[in-house]
Length: 103
Image 1 (spheres, one colour):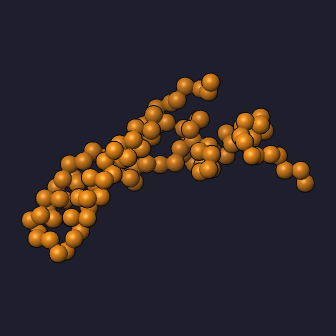
Image 2 (image 1 turned 135 degrees about the horizontal axis):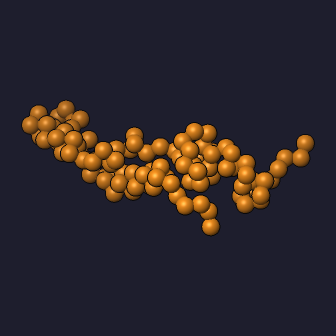
C-alpha cells in the first residue's frame, strides 16, 4: 500500500467526480446560453443556471496532479506521476513496460 492520500489528491478526485457528474447539464446550458438564434430571455435564464453550478463542476478546475505525492508540476500524463515518483517507481520495476536505458 502507498502512502495515505493528502488533501490535494482528495480535492482533485472530488473535482473530477463533480465535473463528470455535471458535464452533460453544463454543456446543455452552455449551448443554450451561446445560441444567438434563441430569445434573449431564454439565454439569460441558461446563463443564470450556469452561474448556480458549484465552482468544482467547471472543467477548468481539474488539474493534473501526481497520484502519489499530490504535486502539481512535472506530471507525466500517461502514468499520472510526477517526474520524481516516476523515476522511483521505474527504478524499482513497478511500472510495466518501462526499463532503464542501456546506452
